[in-house]
Length: 255
Image (cartoon, rainbow, N blue to C red):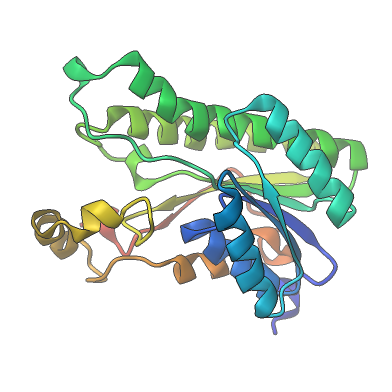
């Protein structure tokens, strides 16, 4: 293994780590030697993910948390520190997809449902992590999962695009603010990835026929496509990288 990628002795929190992209990240981090706490709002799903990762030899903890709830996030982060000893990296990955809705028909309730998890959840999670890392005085890594919707026009999904655009902008601001504490902050922008969240869209033949030909890689992304980038962003190999957004989309936004 390239020594800079070795995460032995390091610890990470992955929100939404019980499935999809988050599970792929957790699997990669564990394979590189890190200890990981995965968070999920569904207790049964989160425990199943923990069991699967542990069966692969990973040192993993499972914590139930709704990231849109400020109290739950603070308590879950404190519990993560208790179980792991400290937290070196925090991946704010938990999110919800928007219900396709024209702006003129969108309710405030639907708009806030998406913002509550995708924006408030990242704020609560990163604030808890940053407080811990600043107090520790040993630096750290923050990574947010945004979306290609942050940089393209997500018609009929403006609330989702707005939430992910906010995350990408928030990351840039935090990268500048927290650099003095040796805390690096970056975002990942996934394209169309196979997951529970996108299963309905991908299974729609009309949708697939319209979207798949626009992906130069000619396939949907998978959870496994995110283990490597998670390891890189947490590792010493990216020690001079902060404030950046990394697109993992099979070339979708270039075509």
